[in-house]
Image (cartoon, rainbow, N blue to C red; front, side, top):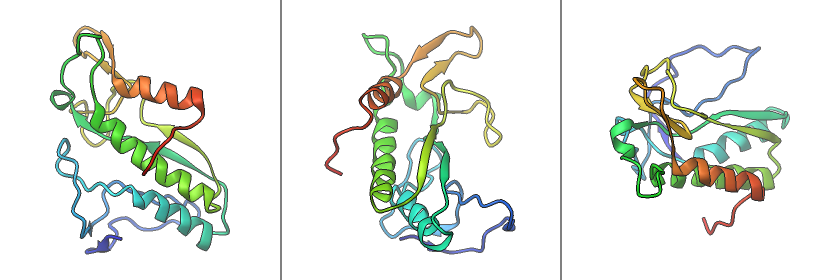
Length: 168
């Protein structure tokens, strides 16, 4: 579990509970980081920990995971392969690791009723405008052309089969 090294920068609102896993000031002894985005920390276990915290300390209320995804620079995603698909395998790996942890939390009684994958198409972000990419589809900002990414095909299979087999 990461150790917090600085107090939270925003105040808590008793009427609006939004635990987040974006920019927490913590040190992870395991030291795994996203090489495609300013070395942000990667800790799939945090999804499980947040779910267990809601289950154990907030009456196991129903909740929804509002955003799950990984930002990458356009250049990091590479160009389409011979099949016309952009190979963002790193994103797929991280998404699966996080969803495995969410599934484990649900199996342990967490009351999560849904997940929203961020996002359908590369779009503007409050944090970094168009610099980082999140989508199932790449959007060329000059031409409007869209190119599918491998994570879109992976997610379609995940949704169609209602799950995946994982040894994680």
